[in-house]
Image (cartoon, rainbow, N blue to C red):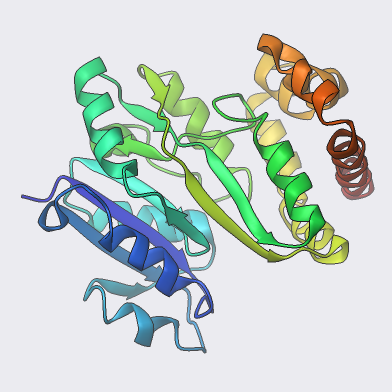
Length: 269
C-alpha cells in the first residue's frame, strides 16, 4: 500500500537528482509504501535518464514549479505528499518520523528543518540564517496530507517563488501542523553572491502578486515583508537572540545577505 507520495520537480538537475533519489531509497520507512513521482520541465541534460533507474513515474509538465507540483499531486495515490526540489536530500528517518508524528498527534502537515550544504564560507552563513526560520512564517510545510492539499486546490499556479508561503497559509488555516526533528539537506552548491541575488530577484518578481492576494495589511504579510520581523523578530523570538551573541561573525555576514536581498526587493518593487 502506498502511504507517501514523494513529488520532485526538476529542470536540468542531473547534478543533484541522484543524491535526492538515493536519500529516498535509504529511508527507514518501508520502500514499498513510497512512490516517487518526477515532474520534469523539459530537461535537456540527463535528469530523466538518471531518474529512470529509480522510478517509472516520470512526467513532463510546466511552465513553473507550482504547476509541476499540482500535476504530481493529482497523479499521486499516497495518503501523504512530500514535495521536494531536486537539490534536496533526506536524512534517513524523515519519512518515518513524519508519518508517525502526523498519525500520533492528528496533524495534517509538518515542517521539516533544513540544513544548507555546499561549498565555501557563505554556505555556513546561509545555514546559520536558515536555522532561524524553522516553523515560522518564513518557512513552509513540506509534508502534507494529500486530501488537505486537494481541499485547498493545491498550489496557486499564478505564483512562482511565494507559492510555498501561499500553500503554507492555507494549510495552517485548515488544521493542526507541527515540526519534526530529522532534517533535509538542501544543496546550494558553490555560493556566489551574484547567483544568490539573481535567484532572489527572479522570485521577487512574484512577491507583489502574492501581497496583493492577501493584502498589504495582513499580519502574516507584514511579518514576511516588514523590516521589524524579517530583520529582527525572527532572529530574536523564543530565545533565538542567544545564537546571534554566540556567533557574531556569522551574524554580521548574515545581515549583510539580508540587506542585499532587501535591496533587490526594493529595486523590483
